[in-house]
Image 1: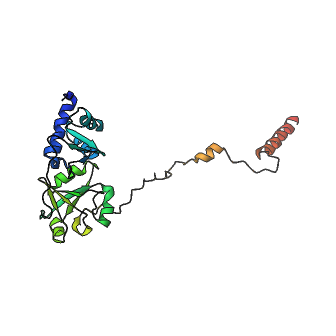
Image 2 (image 1 turned 60 degrees about the vertical axis):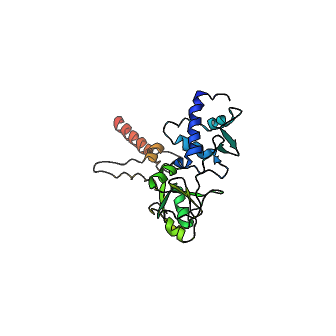
Image 3 (image 1 turned 90 degrees about the horizontal axis):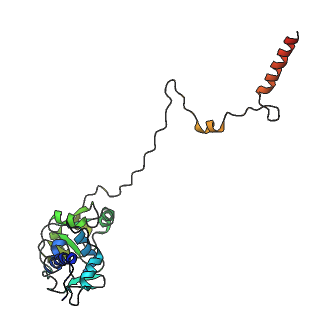
Length: 248
């Protein structure tokens, strides 16, 4: 088996830990066949300290590098081939803790308030036993997620099935609004409108100039002549009067 380049070997070890041992630690839910979407694996990797340089092409290179790869990529998903994917799902129907937590983007808060929580198509809701873990997972989708509190034991009593996943995660189907608690502060909040600058007020001894009037020049006087300014007839009369005085 060809040896992986040095830059990919550390990534291969990290990915083996994520997919074969503790996917729950990274909020990754594997399918029954062990696959998890490439996008989710990449988001989990870059959110860990020291792994922000990873690109999706690095994951694809790991799967295609050798004839006996450790990983397999198929249909936008990846799984571990050797030693094999982790099996963390417990039997469904167990009684969950009284409270579970999920962090959502702020833009989804109003929809969840009206419709409840619905998982993505073909997936399940991923709930955390601690609010800190829920916020860590929620920050992969939004820098300032909104923390929801799920009345999980009350929901289980109403017939909703929960399934344990790893040490601190639970899987669940859609959850009605009645079992959710969330801060209402941003619901229906309109975007603040930019404030208009106040109009200047005249001060004693001051004068507000009309810029449009300055650019247009002084107003034209209405004279009976053909476009002749009103001051010209007066000036001519004054010159004639001076001329008469000089002749005398």
